[in-house]
Image 1 (spheres, rainbow, N blue to C red):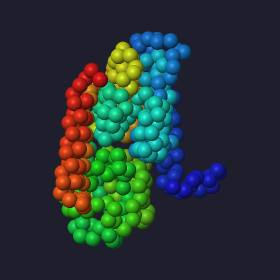
Image 2 (image 1 turned 180 degrees about the horizontal axis):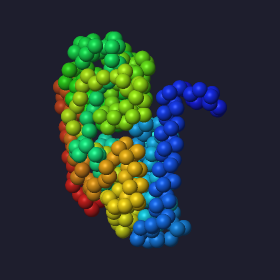
Image 3 (image 1 turned 180 degrees about the vertical axis):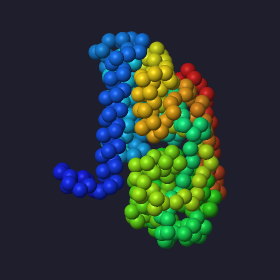
Image 4 (image 1 turned 120 degrees about the vertical axis):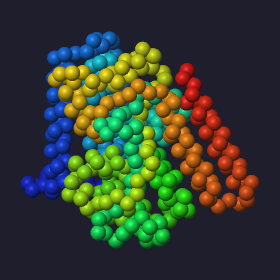
Length: 357
């Protein structure tokens, strides 16, 4: 992505002007939420001394890193006041960067989608506290394939018939809707590996949609939640796109926290999340406005590690599909790979069902 110049010209492109306008609106929400929180602090605001160590919050990069940070800062400022500890933000540009930060112990709480949350719980000593909900009331969202309306790629059938002709913009391998589900539900059943495409561009959901809208790719993976947000932020570009495929429903993302924190603090964080945006009056209105700007969330539901069982099943199914369609030196090697995948799935399920970890 090309870096912005140090000084902007007087006349801005419409998409950049909209992005700047959205940033200003988010800044106003920060001030509004902070004002209400200062005027009417919650009962837990002084639960711990103000000098307590900060809690570090990692954000899954759904848009740009700067945009993601701005979206979450009002809620995290409210969280810090509620638990009596400052909450700092780690906003990264890729799934891999966030996973590495978690591995290095630089993240205490994180907003993660299914596969990354699964790895955090089964490999990184974290646990699920809450799961997001949206205003549509559905328990999840869907993966999408987007093409340019009137562009060179006319249909899904044309894509599946000759993948080598087309340029693909997709999510990272840990992205459930941007990689795992399209592979599992569409490409592998049609014996197509994403590597067969003419070229691949890997990026966020916003970046993949823009790549197709601007003619830099022919087809992009995306999802219903982020494409709806894209329509609001980039209406002109969104009008150039159309959907040619939808997946089955995918469970919403989770909030996870490190096991090393005291149960009382984890309970405080969970109570804050579950109660956020539920209060009546101006304070609740300010919080609901924050949630609306944050991927159009309706709020959070209490959840535990069992909410990751669907993600574990998806990962297991994808691994088996890959093993079944790959080339092997002999059938014994294929069966050995399948047995290792089954053993890993059994280990993951054991962790997810053990609430004492």
